Length: 152
Image (cartoon, rainbow, N blue to C red; front, side, top):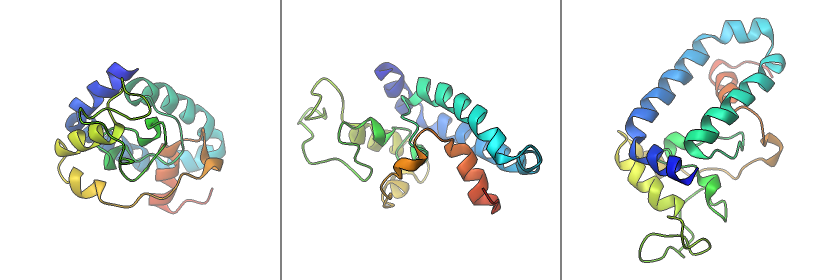
């Protein structure tokens, strides 16, 4: 999985475009999701999201995805699960202080954000702490509900 995480950061521009297009398509399909019912769609969508994002980003299914704001590097892969930048223990070579064989998630996030238009500005946005009650839920469907004002 670590190899794929690094690959995803190197290809952040294309993956971000794809991610934005997918988000637009899911929002466009809002009438379908409403007809079926968000509760019915949630579980299968979360399963698809778990497999897809798990493969590409080693996604931890926090339910509050910020990949587009972190250069396609999931901050939940940080051993300390920091959502707003590195801890200060990044080694000189850019590796993590907790897992010295792993590149710091935030060093990767910076590299990936440089490849995305507006990526560095997006990194400056403060991310709220993860609501643990959302663990395992589909962030894709959450985005649809938020952007369309759908009731859950």
